[in-house]
Length: 305
Image 1: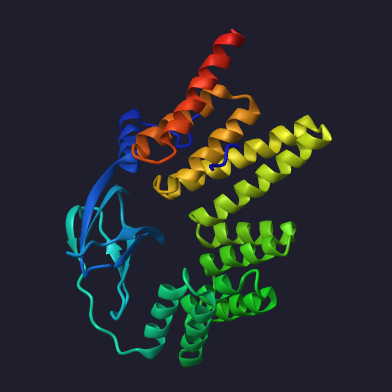
Image 2: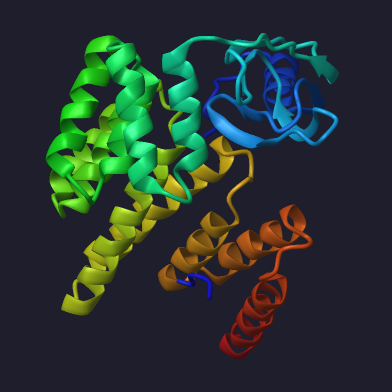
């Protein structure tokens, strides 16, 4: 089941402005060559796992310098810049690690989906061995969310001591507050994450979008049309930012955004979003359902005219 739910840059010289917009919108394809089963992130967004030959093709990588991170079990994690001219095959050699803290963290990540309790034990081991292991503290906080939120918040505080201005820690903190149903604090933490990420924090934009969407639903049930439209508008802005920053890797966000535009009464924008879904996820299991949304919207649009 799926959820349905004047230019920014002043152009003193047109040609300069046009070239600027062009360069900002250009994308490229890179093929990461490293160890098999390695996880690859670009700008802290997970883009996939390498195959048995250690390759992963990543399309729609934005122009400019991007942050590339690669991690494989038993190897030291590598973070490096993906330079503007780099495209095609990018080799990322990894080195075996004997760092017990890093190995414990990796084991925790491996166990997380199947045995959260054991994953928590591994994260705790990692931070005992390396008390300033910020990434492990955040992982521990995420795993504890909904189980022991007080301990989860304590882990976030430790992560911040190890790494001030840590956007991911603030986003994880917001999730904890949302788990406690403390929406004001969740919004505050999501906003902080966006500031710390200098505007780039797709998890926080998504979180805010969900909160605005919920607020719009509440306003609708109370008959407050102005508040409803305001919150749907803010939700749409947040989801659009998240989709852009995630480089179109999260299909559910398209469904959420399309549903928001439908509820705003903007059928054309909803149709445009669903068409983007079909373009970006041609083989997705929900393709037929999304196609039906477009048919229904076109039909109701014709009846309105």
